[in-house]
Image (cartoon, rainbow, N blue to C red; front, top):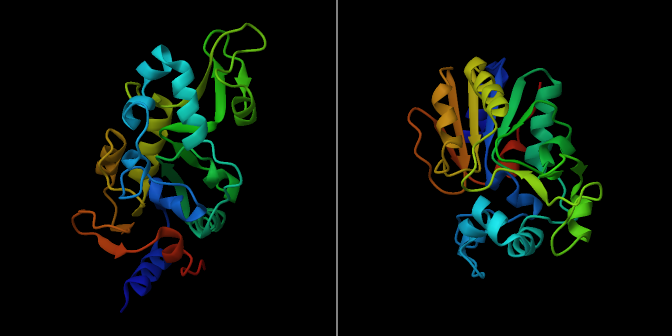
Length: 239
């Protein structure tokens, strides 16, 4: 039996699937990941990428932060791929209880998924640090170098968890509930090295653990499929 056939058999037998995804879920849509050989963290910039995406950089070098943020994280014309659409299909069929994602691109919702727990926030949401007024990503793109609130003049911040910031408690609680109730957990497109997000998989106590990734990822008692996430999930039939 091939790995895809094993995955199909697992999905057919599952009633409550949870999906935990990282940057590799969106690379087939044209977005770069962070830690691969050609990822964002390998590129040279004014400051190290981890600093460019830190709370300290946002506060102390706001214009530099936004220059990097616009160039690297706000990508126009990016559409969901087969992985996003297959997960939405599984949810509509009543087999998927939720998507827990480290991504901030909003592609799961664009594909039709409803139960999405965005651990690191979303580039689609931005708020004034002074009055809390909401702004979309289009406003951020067109108001350089630093976007200021049109209501009070405060600096606008993306609703994205930067280095040095805590994950949102409510989002984490939802993600934990999703993983806890699952009989199958599919982990995909992540090296499982980013904490505390990666630690959430410890809450899984179900029957089937599946890992899909281009590079080997250690997870005990898991079905490991080496490959692209969209290419792999695209072969699954929802029934």
